[in-house]
Length: 173
Image (cartoon, helix red, strand yellow):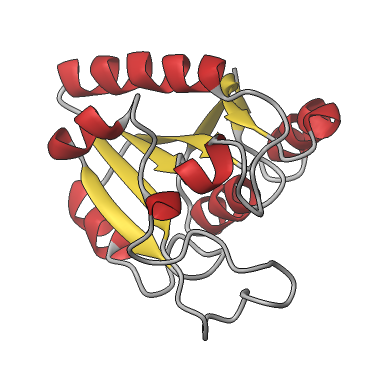
């Protein structure tokens, strides 16, 4: 079974005007992810959105990151282009950089026994990096598409793709 994990494709990162908005447009990555969701679902795979949803007392709020994607705000919502897919997916909320801590992801993956997990979303240099690391140390085969992730600092995109491949052992396509 193939699983597609989509990290933080939220208004707070993908739309302008929020504390951690990406400087580059996310329209290309949104289109890529929408196409991948359709492909994975057509192959009877699973799609899992893992989304920041913070409260003021969360460990990363204030140091090192400003308040962002606060629970219940529009900032913490999946972007409109991908929101229609949420009904066909599993949506998990996270309140740290970890996709496993305080989520049901470990249980879902243990039950699903995926042959491969694809990671897509933002930010390649923060949450995607932690996601790939956490999945790899648990023994999963992980793939990342160059079209499927975007770094907060887009000038470092290739650096992080190289890190995924050569330091974490992910398949980079």
